[in-house]
Each structure stands twice: as C-alpha cells, then as structure tokens.
Length: 316
Image (tube, rainbow, N blue to C red):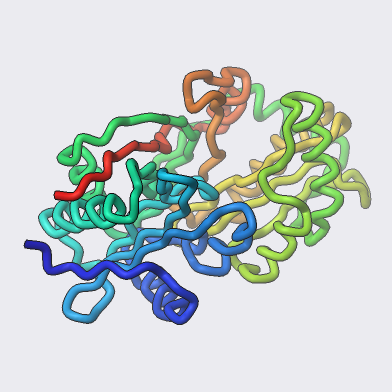
C-alpha cells in the first residue's frame, strides 16, 4: 500500500512548486510554473503534486488531451521532478501510484519525457527503472549533439575555416535583446527549408526572456550593426542549450555561425559541463538530418538521447 498522496496542481501551490523545482535534483527553469503556463491556451494542465507525510516528494508537470496525459506535451522534456531524498524503490511505487491515479481520472496512457541526464544536479534516473518495470514502450528517440567540457574534442578543419573566414570579414559576436530581428531570420529559414514555424512566437520568447533573464539569452553575429546569425541559449546549472539557431544567407556565406559557436563554447560558457546543440531529427526520431548533425559534430559534439515513453495507465 503506497503512502504517497497525489493532488492535482492549482495556482495556490505555485510558490511551493517553484521552490521544489529549485531544490530538486533534476528540475530546470522550464519546469517552473511561469514557463509551463506561457502556453496555457494551447494545453490543458494536468500537473500533479505527490506528497508524503505532508511534504512534497515529487512533481509531475503534465498536460492532457482527451484520454492521453503527457509530461509535458509543450516541452522538450518533463517527467517526474524528484527531491534529493528520492530512492529507486520509492519512485517505482510512486510512478505506479501516479498511473493508477491517472487511470482513475479516465486516462489510458501517460506519455513520459524524462529529463535527460545532462540536466541532473544529482543522479536521477530512478524513473527510467520504474518505466521499465511498468512495461513502458520507447516511442520517440531524438539524438542531440553535446560537448562535454571536461574532455573536449578538437573542432574539425571545416569549422576552423569558417571561423577564420568570419574573422577576416570583421564579423563580431555580442549578446543582444533584439529578438525581433533574429526571429525574422529564424522564421524565414524554417519556412523556406521545412515549411514550418518556430515553436514560440516572438512575443512569447520576449515575454519568457523577461521572466527568466538569466536563463534565456540571445547571442548574435553582426556585420557592422546588422545581425546576420544568432542563437537563443537556454542556460541551466550544468548546460548551455541551443534552443534556436539560425543564419541569414549572408551569415551562412561568411561563417558567422562558426564564429558564434566558437565564442559561445570557449568564451561565454566554458564553465558549463555541457554545451548542447539540440536535436537533429524529424518524424519522431525516425529521420536523421545528417548534414545538420555533421555541422554540430564538427565542433566536437557527440550524441545523447532525448527519449519519450508511453506508459499504460491502469488501476493497480
């Protein structure tokens, strides 16, 4: 018999939720309420608070669509946010309790995106073992390219050549707040290459950057005063993650991104344990964009996986 108590999240718990994320062993700012709720008009919240003896033991950021609960449909990752006292046995029983609770709410399955290990402040893969025990199936596997700062590989010659080219053309790198100009570059590229649009509107990313100014930062490559390339970096305890990367035709032609990444990796974020370029997949990981991942691996990045599992919900 589990001694965990499960409570649906409501706004009265916002401070407690955010405080627990800060103190957890695997939470990041993306899992705080202000970030979770910026797109509340697109997702129905189904977040849960799991307590034991009156104290929060874990959180589950989640959304719901019909009979499917996702953790979280609007985020790259979610899953259980665990306190430092969480143990393997407890998390196994906890996740069993959560799926039973969701089944009692009419859910048929839980789509679960665990926080990748590079974001963990302490080892925190108890949920992966619990997923195995609950017969979860791996439904999506995206591969991301990551530099491990404690044992860096050298840049490939093609990346070094791009850096030298940008320097010869007097391209400069600096932090910027001009999200609108960068979004024009980004939107044009996504439309022309993939007939797609950014996940965030420019208004949304500007709003989030005001809420999390230390965590959401824009860096640009400039030809004089003109931005020709840029990257939005999500900064967490151990990781500098590229949320968006894009260059104009002029930026692509002069090696602007090569110089930008050289500065970000070696000057701006050298103390971060990981520099994460992000994923290079389409169609739920079934398609690998080989030219894109070749570019990222040219900086010495190598693979980690962002996984998604499907867990059956049933009352035990």
